[in-house]
Length: 271
Picture 1 (cartoon, rainbow, N blue to C red):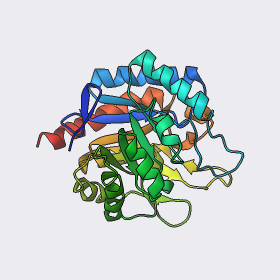
Picture 2 (cartoon, rainbow, N blue to C red):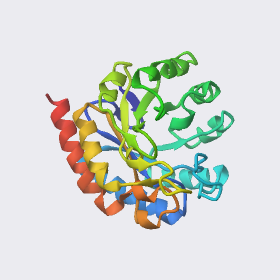
Picture 3 (cartoon, rainbow, N blue to C red):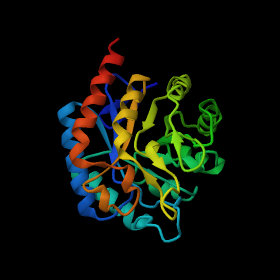
Picture 4 (cartoon, rainbow, N blue to C red):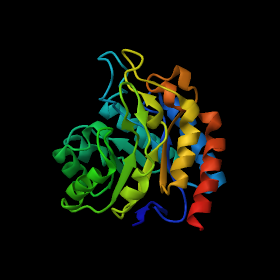
């Protein structure tokens, strides 16, 4: 089922990309990323949604950077939305955040580690916004059906489900691309998170490691497996980003990566 958002449809015959910095750092970084990615997506005829988190609650250390918090973070997201005329996706961590985030966000995202939290899913559903449920690293794709049903039973059928890899031993994730056709059977658009899938959780001790070299490979595979949407964390200089730097794409590399993904998407969807 395609989902209507702004002037386009998610899950139709055009690729949709959710992309932006991991967390809110500065408005200048958000502006540079939003402007650059919007230009790339317009050039490639790709639907674009700006992604950024006002808070990253799941951190390796209490000292890890989390963002600027809800008030300032949503203020910055609202500014990007207005300045660049872009829809916004951001995550929530507690039920009380849902209606507040929904004042700015067009898509409410449920973090992978919180995907089974019933109250969180119900609160997100009741905003009436699109709800993107990220599959927990600890779940089989079939298990996502019950989480989708929680949102449906709360009166909302605007749903997306996201694969972001599965725990594979210590400090590693593996992507099983069977998850994409399995979750497509639910009847909603399926997203593949290409940057979190290359994370190495906790591998740096007090922070998460990653290997961005494999982001394009996994993104291409997801397109070949039939994903409707791709998710990327993108930053002008990931090596100086305040969180998730090792797995984020450089902004300068986005066009090359997106272009190849779009080519594969077109082949698969015009078959």
